[in-house]
Image (cartoon, rainbow, N blue to C red; front, side):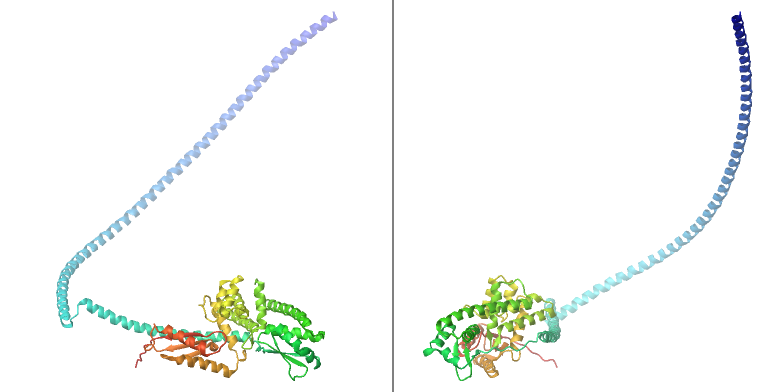
Length: 515
């Protein structure tokens, strides 16, 4: 029973709940529909308001566009009116210009007609003139007896002669001016170079005095029956002069190296005290080695002092041997060093190769210590330098320093000039003034003794003589024979060191004086 009650109660509750929920759902749906109606109305009202606003804006903008179009139309009308006015003005101006041009063209046409008439008259006058000129030309040819070609040729020849004369005058003036300037500049360069290279005078004697510790040493040097002195002289090739000079003997020889070896040998003998042929030979060999070492050291010191590098050892030794060679009493090594310095100074002044000039200046006289009969010292020195890979420029400078071969470089000319300067300095060489002058006079006298020789001048300290011959008496064919005859006469009648170059000059001069 209670269970049934509960079931009924539950069923009644469910039924009541269903009716209540149904009611609530219908009520809720009605509320939603009412709210939707309200929202719909609001949206429609808002849309109408926005549409009204947009319509007003569109109407306003359309009005603005219509106003602007009206304004643009008015502006365009004004601009068109302005352009029409300008075109009207331009048209009036062009019309005026066309009228003026037409008037001017008419005037020009009239002038052209007048010019054509005048041109016709000028043609007639020109034709008449040509006829008159032709008649005058024929008359001139008849009177002068010349054709036009001949007259033109004579006129051109006269003009050419006048121009050649004027050109010769200008060339002569230019040559004199250049020569004067060159002489002045060369004197300045030579003076500067000599001043920068002032060296002492070096005169080497041909005898050497050896001091002895006592007079008794002279007898020991002579030896029993003169065997010691004979052995010494035969071995060294030097003459030993024993005279009344106290505690001294004199060694005489033209070969400085032999004389130096003999001096060293004799000094070592006097220090040792034992003087006999075997000892002399032993000390002589030692002296040879010592002098040879000194020669090598002299060459190396010279190379170092002059800053010359990359040179063959044989050439270094040859340069050292120059220290024991003299020319007219002048030490050849000192002379070569002086020539190297002079040549490098001259090269610096004129912009030539300083190192080349210094190197060639030092080596220019190496032929003087080369023993050979195949040529003069310039040729021997050039061949020796070529053998030991010296450059062709150095070889040419050595060969050409006495003008035996042509100069190939400016440095070769500088070597010859520096050699002449060094050799000709006052006191540089010991030849007596009387002998020097006599040799120059003899050279000139021999040259003047030949027929056709008008004058002769010895130059370069007697190393060269220039002979002037008369072109009327000596022609080009006989000139070489006269030159050879002078050479043969000098060789047979004179004694001289080195060589003498004979230059024969034959020339014809034309001189005119303008008053």
